[in-house]
Image 1 (cartoon, helix red, strand yellow):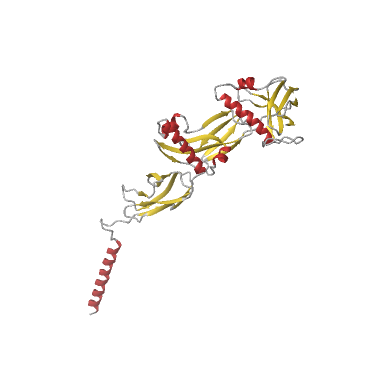
Image 2 (cartoon, one colour):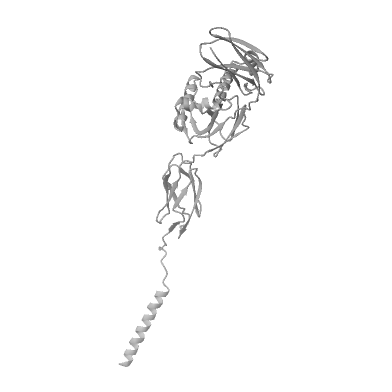
Length: 381
């Protein structure tokens, strides 16, 4: 009996060892595989309004030979996607809205859970242009426009600040709309599309652009401005906000000069004005200003800059009008201005008047302008 029990125990022990040995040497069948796992290093991305190229790293655990991640674009302002062995590359276009925007890229890999890359882009970059003014003198100045995007089409120009007061235009959007409306009218009159007109007259440019301006009013203010535009026949899209810089044209230096001014009543409504230059030997102008004018200054009071600019601007505009007919500034001086001793008799309505006399001249063929401080005398009819 003991022998039988011993043999049974030995048999069971041997059977147990055999089963244990099978468990240690078992391997997976050829049909088994490990599930791929996709990992994205950056799932939230914040980019500037100017856009640009971006790269997000990724990895795949248990890759499948020959299989790459796929990227689904959910907005049209992200493009140029390229997937390498470890990176997802893409481009974010510049934001043309004055508010931030969001989108996401959906990344999938065969057999793995999908992931998303969330992109938040800042609002439109307002400063798309660097505008610099150089050689600023009363006679001329130069403006250079440098866009941040050298391939972008844009319209550069200058305009008097007085335009906004006279026109009532008070927003950037309204200004652009009014300018494009003007271009449309000119294009239709010339039987051209908007694109053809702006291209032919060089109103649209790309890259750095420089222009020199002459013959503008000294003491006045201008805006140098620019805005991006895309054109297709009569279709257009404004691609940037209006950007501008203020240009204050300096007044020319006014030299001291002395004139002897004598006024003599020659009748009930007539006055003779005689002028003798004492320290000025070139052309000069005589202006008679009634007391109803905003430029009139009572006797004994100092001339304010408003009156001096008013006298100068009146003369300056007369010269420019004469030159617009093909004449020169020098021809105007010789024909309408005085030299040496002069005298005139004028018929005027009853009232108080101020006589202003000032020297004038042109520099390097430019528009003639006031060159001396005005000297004034008063009379009453």
